[in-house]
Length: 416
Image (tube, rainbow, N blue to C red):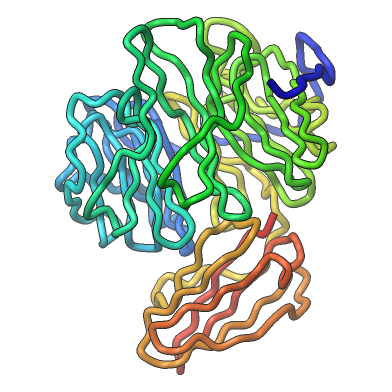
């Protein structure tokens, strides 16, 4: 086991807060429970809800109105949602995977997973890889052909307990990470962090904490350290020192959002005990002393996203919220939704991002910082791709201004 040290411990967050309510409620759909939220490059918000009044809900006007997009779905079983590009999405459910190529207008059933335990998470990354987190013998499934075929690439079967994948993260250097949790039966074994160095084809144990815990969310901070949140706080791994640190919190961390200015937002679901709500670290993740619960109906937070304008979106199990202020600097331009020239993925990104054209003519791209500094100009050939490495851009919010003839598009990129 790698060395684990205790950085600090505290039983309550300090009550630093904003003068006005930080959150406003966004009404969305029926009585289903919120399970996931994503935003595409044009600012369209998609929400996955589980339950009899659940399914996929889409907002084209930043949460003002919502449309139910359940044509072809089994709404009450929806759990996770992932975006490949502006139009193509995937949802995971108790029944497997559904796919849409038209922003949810119609869904195809591309993987039959009936009676295969709890497909909680689905992720897209590295241009073409889709991974779905399940349980036991079907712990991780992989598709590299737009969801047409699927293969079980990780089995966690044990006759005595149920282990299942709770989060998957496409990390730097083409290494993918996943974390796990137990359900139904507790075990003498422990949840683990897994990793893959061959685009998700095979998996090995990266870390066995060897303590009673469960792991829910996985991310990287701005210094390139691996963050794993769950019961009792955050575990942090430094690749330079090969040391695991335990940032102990009286909270169950359900999601983390790392912001390029060295802030980290933390969502906590209190469950049966512990602190709940949203806190933020302003020192790179060493302490979480600012509480952002003003405006919450209950002090409960499950998952994060950001809208096109740089405001924070957060869902609990029963409510959807939006921050009243931006957490990123406003970039001073509006998204273009009438024309779609280029997709860009992954976004946000750490190692690289790829611009992919859908035009039969050359596309010109200019990249600017949020302060207006010109960073890079390039052309994408017809139906071609352009690779942008992390070394080409500073860590900041980048505005891509895209032109093909008289057609324009703007994309906001987050490099962190």
